[in-house]
Length: 242
Ligand code: SF4
Image 1 (tube, rainbow, N blue to C red):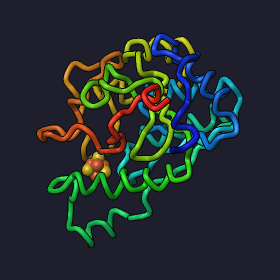
Image 2: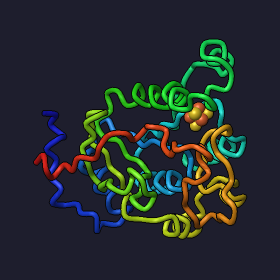
Image 3: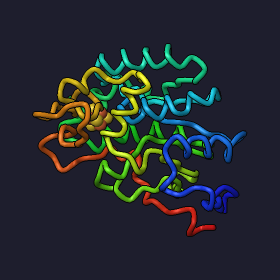
Image 4: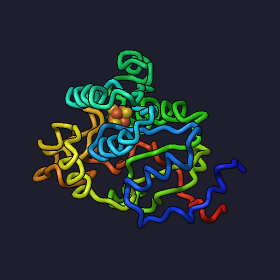
């Protein structure tokens, strides 16, 4: 058993605010290999702001799939400028779209999206998290699907690390209020009907959706797929391991 697997949760409950959970995490795991990951959605931007307020030079890992929206790259640049003490690191694939098409055929995202996500997201994330002990994400239970079962603090068996989800108990409206109150940069596409942002090929606007609305309806529209597989690990509360 990894030493961190037996972390006590007595100081931390789901009733804690995200800011308190972030502060607790930075205290509890000071000196550990701790990273934040983001896809530059609104939740991730809020989390980055909460972390940045502590002045700790943490790595913020993102995966450039080479299929992101221009607005997402613009937001990335804004975040880097806004939070210069954080270490933004692209750990995306080196497989170019041309090389992928040559190897697997054109438009892999259409005929085999799971393989495309495995190549461009899941495997790069697995490599990025190798050696990491504590992983902070912007996931929320209110996002539904597999995310409905997440805890603020959980052991992730698939990656063999502690996973902290400070926003677990929040919803998009609370994230939006935080972002507005703190003047946190966010993706301009949230105001043009995109509740979530992924790759250009697999993300469509959702009619009537504004920046306060969260739905994954615009992702892989017309298919059963709703997740890229990055968070596939079944949540396992640390308390059960303690
Ligand atoms: S979201 Fe679409 S384009 Fe992006 S990696 Fe997955 S299948 Fe490929």
